[in-house]
Length: 189
Image 1 (cartoon, one colour):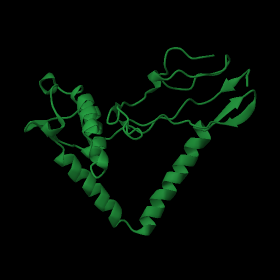
Image 2: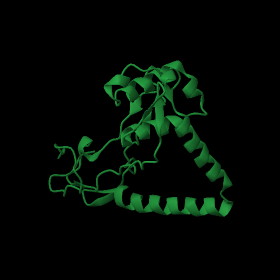
Image 3: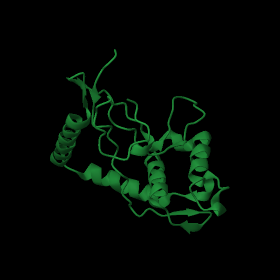
Image 4: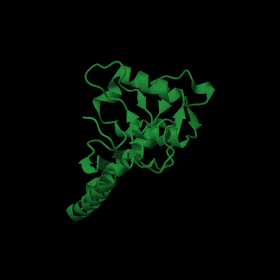
């Protein structure tokens, strides 16, 4: 289907990670984490009760990507060198707090999430194509996280970095107004 005009509000990005003060030790040495490193460690900790963390390929791939973000003295580390216990405690605490919530509290949170989701869909989930409103199927960038894959995928455990507006090239009509944001340099028109 060819279109003559296309206008939309760009894509929606997942919320920024909020620092939680997670600490780790590598080879017994305390390591201060920047925001991106902490997000990686937090995502790892959230997988702690899954079979993935026992998978040697998963461990090796995650550790290799994590090591790339660290000081040069930690470039040659193995999974066994990292103490994630602080991150594991945080994830356990979050899980316990969630389990202690009443049904009413859980329903209230779910209702707020649904309301926000509907507001965001109204803004990002529609486009104007040739003067007609059309639904946009997938308007949210994938959040950063650990690649799971299917089965014995060789890249399982690799880090999928955060996508930002500068990574995105928008497909817009010639006369369309570019949505707010620092989008990738070349917009397809």
